[in-house]
Amino acid sequence: MSTNPATNAWTPASWQGRPAAQQPSYADPAALARAVAALSRLPPLVVSWEVEALREKLAAAERGEQFLLQGGDCAESFEDCESDNIARRLKILLQMSLVLLQGLKKPVIRVGRFAGQYAKPRSADTETRDGICLPCYRGDNVNRPGFTREEREPDPELLLRGYERASLTLNFVRALIDGGFADLHHPEYWDLGFLRHTPLRDAYQRIVDSIAESLDFFESMSGQRIHAATRCEFYTSHEGLHLLSEQAQTRFISRQRRWYNLSTHMPWVGMRTAAIDGAHVEYFRGIANPIGVKVGAGMSAEWLQELVQILNPQSQPGRLTLIHRFGAGDIERRLPELIRAVRSIGARVLWVCDPMHGNTETTSTGIKTRRFENVLAEVEAAFRVHEECGSTLGGVHVELTGEDVTECVGGARGLAEADLARAYRTSVDPRLNAEQSLELAIRIAQRADQQRRQRRASAKTIT
Ligand code: PEP
Ligand code: CO
Image 1 (tube, protein in one colour):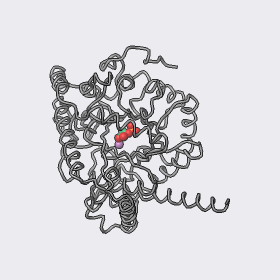
Image 2 (cartoon, protein in one colour):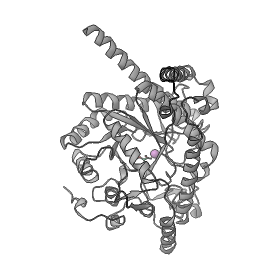
Image 3 (cartoon, protein in one colour):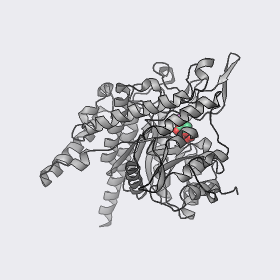
Image 4 (cartoon, protein in one colour):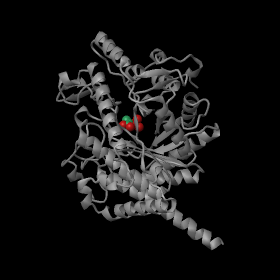
């Protein structure tokens, strides 16, 4: 067993004494130090009471009382920081959450993979094309996707441009929500144009109508407009990968007497940086935010147990979300032992399914894609496995966009490999488009509906 880093004193910089995977190498250390110093003086993007409010909701999801919907781009791009793109992303997440609320009959916690999802882990440090070898693209916070030496050179100034874009994104999201954009009385605000022609239109409309009826019913019963139910919050999340920038935005909150990463509500540790002795686990163990950890093929029961003990030694409710991503073919074989491993140490976690990262494949023409049927199959298997193990699936983590892209195949419109060329825009992983995202939510809701009906039918036979 490896040494347990939790025995050493933690500071926001203590990770620097450990091996840090997936960090860019900058040519000019002085320029990097200047950018990081500038970042550490800028105001936080979120505040600790919001972070605590999210933790309490995640604790409720752990108890099976709420459901987490976490979604957004694989990698946000600076270029997409514009009003239409942000509004559309918000709209699809709102539509999905409405469908899930109606189907699962529990509040949905909305967490965007946005306002800071600008740093990416990569499988190789360099990329070679036609004999030219350049640093790989590591997200807009680090370098640019174009295949030129200039664009691929890590530039510390981008950390500041990323902070600004995250703050502009969050400012717009907050203003839209404060202005009533997320009001459940007005789902028509979230209309996504092309969805009017989708084969899913009727299913979605039925859900919207049923929510409207329920609101009407409660409001006429109580004689009041239901404000609590109609206002909803949005939280942010990103992979906490670039540790110097995460450290720069880590602040001590004297009222709470704890350190918070105030660049986002819920940072997560990716699969490639979850080593017990690594710098990321060291950094994450000391911040007070609710955190996620990606869990996939290659993670043993012992490794996971150690991670859970280091990252949540007090078993604080809502602190730790385990986001499993095995792929449709492997989940049934791999997940049960990890559920048992966590249970056997008496730990409390929120289990969430990422049905994207275990289902990535490459077409015969070399395009990275995912099959909608596999995404759906993994989510369905996740619900089933948790039920069979006496555990609860408390959420889904999805790569999606509000745009009409063609990056994943399948879904109600039957996108084929030949369609991928039409609107393939992601700079890293393929995302579900708005229609496929809505379909995923509808299928989850239908599954819950069916189960409720079966339970009612069997209750009737018993009485
Ligand atoms: C991601 O969420 O984009 C990602 C890289 O995931 P994972 O760490 O699970 O591979
Ligand atoms: Co991804």
